[in-house]
Image 1: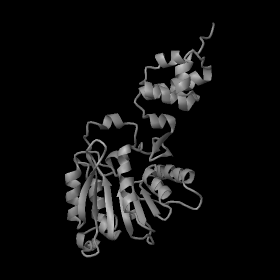
Image 2: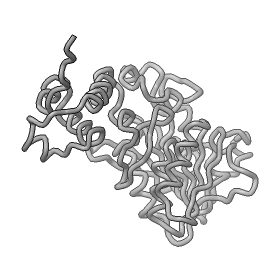
Image 3: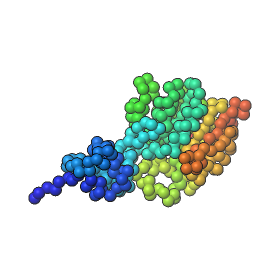
Image 4: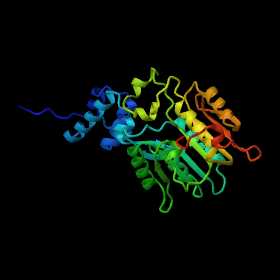
Length: 296
């Protein structure tokens, strides 16, 4: 029996049935074939091993797996982050948190990233602000391993991130500081959200959280309630949330005693991040006065 030849670059592009941008990404990353080569030499033959790699990756994409998982990385704020099914794929919307922190972290500030996942926010800020002391928390040990790998790969020697595993603020050790900035992209997808099936390859815990509810606000409520014990006077809390949750999150921030509450819009004009500030003149209420347990 005569074995069929793997074919040319042009043959594979025609046969893979992928969006062209995805097909070009696979050729570039998995076969080392640049876009210019695709245009100039579509007749170039693919060897069998390369064709097999490309076919396997294309099948994963056709099944709905994110391109970032297939490639093993995703760019975020100019840095290449390792990603896999242990963590959410970093999205451009989350860069709003980074931009807000960059604008409000003055001097030797301290920052806490709650639900760090791949470490995209925490590592980016540690990379951009050498004087920033960065802490990052996640409930998933597997996610923290990804964050640790990204910190080791992307941060200069001697600059790191304090990583802690646990349930939001309860993960922090007794000696942890109060923070000038607390940022979070927590689970905020409601249990019955119709978009969940399309996100089936990403970790459900990072999407809907451990305490599933109908409005997706369970973890946002816990983070806001716990902020008074962990923010320094004048410190900021910044939260990413769903496209229709800004009004509810602003109400939570005000109820916790934060001031200067407002929302930031993403590139599509949607209120995607809401923030609030603790002021020295009107300190936040003590946790005990709010009935906040140490686990919050």
